[in-house]
Image 1 (cartoon, rainbow over the protein chains, first blue to last red):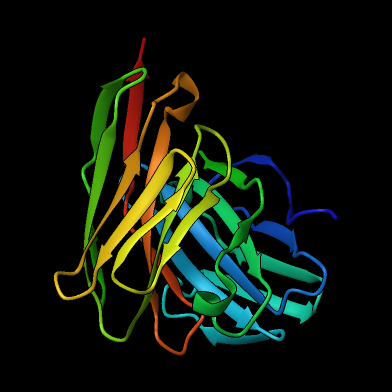
Image 2: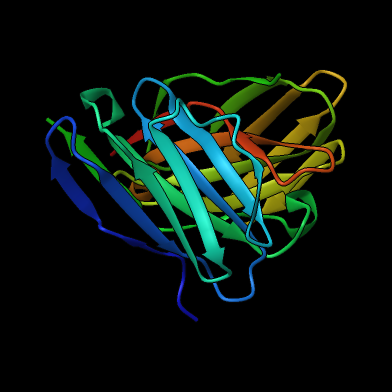
Length: 117
Length: 110
């Protein structure tokens, strides 16, 4: 069974450009999470969806960030306009059930490394 | 809100035992997780504790004390491949949110 698939794996862009990161969760998983990881702040939860519905977006840094999940097999995280401080690794993860504590774990994709010049 | 603290870095010798501590403050605690992350890779699940006590899984064990807001990950018979970051994460009751600490980078030397 394929794991969580993210694209692109690496992206280098210039300040002000739009960035779109994509994620395909594991088939049958009901919850999807977007995290951002930097050396200074570690792994931060940006937003998560349950059954394609955004449940908590309190971690989204500002209005430049938006996320969508149009169907159970696809999600996007968009940054517009991008800034150098957005440089980080962005991870998508999925889990099977409503309560993570019952299901036991998150399954992470390989991440998208974003560099904004 | 939630607050999770763990040491930034640790070093140990191959074959030794190392204990990585994690303290947390959260409302609605509903489980503590440990993840391993090798450099340049995704985090992978190691262990889960929701009740007090020790959970053993091969060379790795994880301990939880809910009253103290404290957990540790114990790694025995260290191997070079155990060099990685170890992330402590806390789940909140009735949500799917998993909040991570900043991680402890462990370096194992020969």
